[in-house]
Image 1: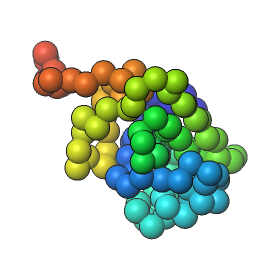
Image 2: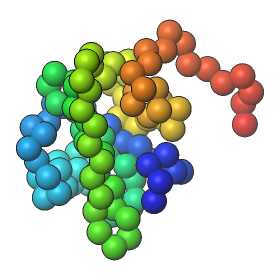
Image 3: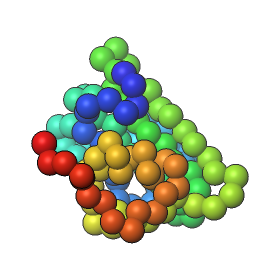
Length: 108
């Protein structure tokens, strides 16, 4: 599965201890998003300082974790209160871009 595929992208809305691995992150997903763990959705977790992000995904035969550590700066808090991100918002978050306004030029 590619991290920017069509599956839902779900943001865990609390700071997470980045020492958690597959079992710990899976338990957080089950508590916050019941029944979604094995759907292929991407689950995003940020630490308190917002300089680390982990992404957990089920790939059909096992879990995968992607991990990114910023050497400078932090991941923006530009989607407060959002638990599901669009692919565009996901890419902006990973790139550290803080949008002033998000809107489509054309509606589908």
